[in-house]
View 1: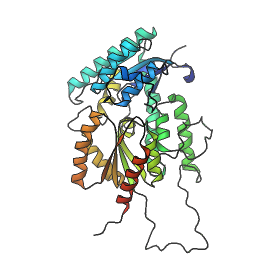
View 2: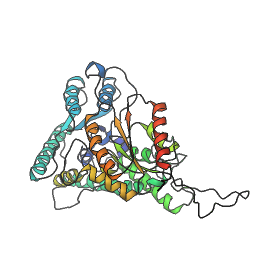
View 3: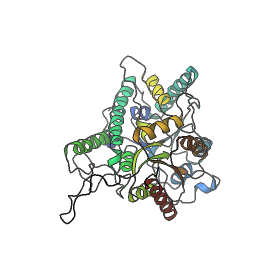
View 4: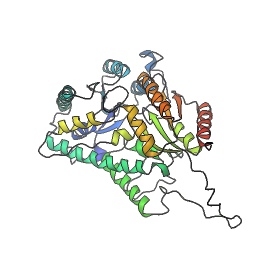
Amino acid sequence: MTPETTHPEARPLLGFLTAYVPEELFHAAGFTPVFIFHTPRDHGHARAHLPGFTCWVAGSALDQALAGELDGLAGMALAQTCDTIQGLTDLWRRNVPHIPLFHFGMPLRLDGPAARAYLLAELRSLRERVQALTGHPITDDALRHSIALYNHTRPLVRRLYARASVLPPSGGNTSVLPPSGGDRGGAPDLYALIRSAFQKPKETYNQALEHHLQSATSNLHSPFSPLLPPPSPLHSPPSPLLPPPSPPHLLLSGPALADSILFDILAQSGAHVVGDLLDLGERYFAVDVLEDDAGDPLAALADRLLALVPTPTKHHPQRTRAAHLLSLVQERRADGVVFARQKFCEPHGFDYVQLAHALDRAGVPHLLVELEQASQAGQLRTRVEAFVEMISQPHVP
């Protein structure tokens, strides 16, 4: 049985931890790639190997592995990003030898011919190492099949983001998408649906999300559509000169989607998230891989990785994060930006300074919140609600 014909649920799981891992290559090798989100649980195992000021995204992955919670993985993939991930690579090989690790080099500067040549060499090396583990070749046809599958996912998620303003960022419903035709109950929330893309086989995720998107456009009572109650007969409709205030539109910036507390608080505050600059958010699905039956699929994968909006650990002089964020603010008519930085994440800390300066010059309000291993829900709620109230106030000329 070839990887293309293997049932999605029968494929072994392969974990990954950064936003530059080429999922299609691992899928073509017969794996189902799943992102290892950090959790608030702390078994204390990682503390023996990492200093206390280590970002919990990496610390949690090592802690879960040493606790045996990741023993179901057939492997783990890390792309070169920050110093913490580089350190985790060495710690993983020494302390979690039963889960094979695939480290993937990613250039820091994404422009120029040297970056493409280096990245293509890394992809070819990765292909050989994966083939050595599985014992069967990763053919170009298998790669093209996986590329087509993932290219099906990306426009579906882009359609989901196009409806972001009418979806709550989270409504307490954190279960993943049901199979096509199923109903999990309750309104689907934006980031639970996005997170599912990293947790479910793409074959089933695509089918389920396509079904939900079709229901949203054809059914006026779909949970994707905002429902307005009829006016009460005891009250006259509001004056057309005084329309009800619209909820403030926000953008999010930060690393991953693990902590749902922030999304719950944003939804409860009445704000609508209309887009993001999250590492695993909108930018991750923005660029498709070129499908060319006569071309090199590895080169196509390299071109996509280089074309993405850089994360804070990468640089592209013509495609800066500040310019992209400002264009998002204008395009989505955002009223403000919330920076959700994981505590001790240095790349996003440095990134915040540059992005905040750009927003200040443009007169765009912004809020920085720091997410810890254990959510500080009370403090977070106070700050977010105050920010939403501030940007909701009418501007007095």
